[in-house]
Image 1 (cartoon, rainbow, N blue to C red):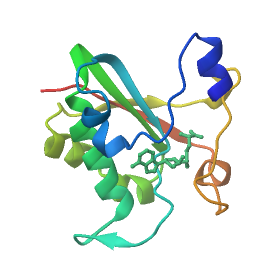
Image 2 (cartoon, helix red, strand yellow):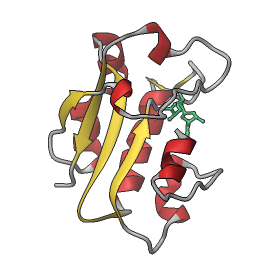
Image 3 (cartoon, rainbow, N blue to C red):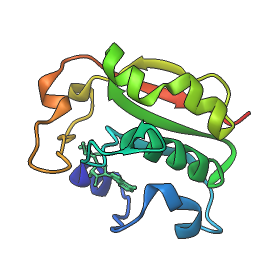
Image 4 (cartoon, helix red, strand yellow):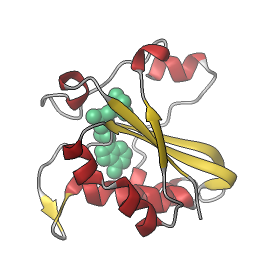
Length: 140
Ligand SMILES: C[S@@+](CC[C@H](N)C(=O)[O-])C[C@H]1O[C@@H](n2cnc3c(N)ncnc32)[C@H](O)[C@@H]1O
């Protein structure tokens, strides 16, 4: 993934909290913000939801503040009812102020140099499944 970004002329920044993107980039605006396979690496719950559910909602809310006029946020997840139940993309969109998201299949083989990285040494969802989906969120 990092090699791919570098090849495209991108800069790599570390230690950016996705839930606080607006603090990390108070002035800069982006046309596309992408988070591939968000996972906090913890199964603990917060506010009656999984940590992943909470993190993604906070990310979507913060990312919206960093988008330019026609900007969008892309979120790639495992495509199955379990993951849809954790992240609830439609409800997350309402929560964070986006239109109902549309989606398309994500095929890693189409992105030369892309390799999935696990959060911990735990099982990788991306390696255990073969159907993935990219959700596209556009602000209301
Ligand atoms: C399953 S890995 C996917 C990594 C990479 N995006 C990919 O597609 O291979 C999940 C990533 O989400 C990151 N993550 C979790 N919570 C985060 C947060 N609040 N801010 C930024 N990254 C976070 C983890 O550090 C980990 O790198």
